[in-house]
Image 1 (cartoon, helix red, strand yellow):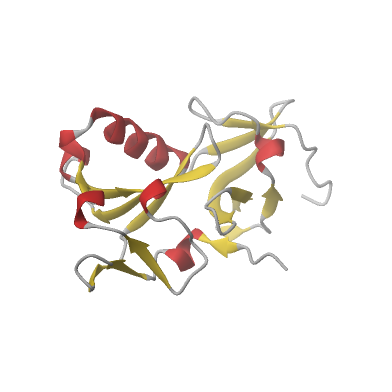
Image 2: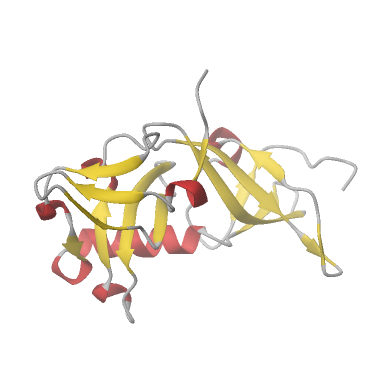
Length: 165
């Protein structure tokens, strides 16, 4: 059976650099590319400004279902200021979190508050939840197909809302 992984659980793993034979730390964040529904960056150090963050592109990691995240070399670790494409991926991934989700007819479902991926880092589910009167409502689970494109300030889902809400 295919094991689905929560981004939060992946973020607790150690990162190993195989060329050094050393643990280089644990991620502070794992970001998803909204356009591709795929893990895009593993953030090792969050900078005071995004440009000062230290990241590892997901392609350098390979598999996400192992006990540790491995990279071949410290050359896979980048300071964002040196690469404009990394900056845009960092910003897109950060904006995805807490993004409001609406139905096509304008009903607000809540915000993205969890993501599940498979071993390759492909998103299998977005969890959306709404706060109401200080209480957390049950999460709705939406697939990437339900979400469609995740560009812009909010996301629109094709899935009808659970009438119990």
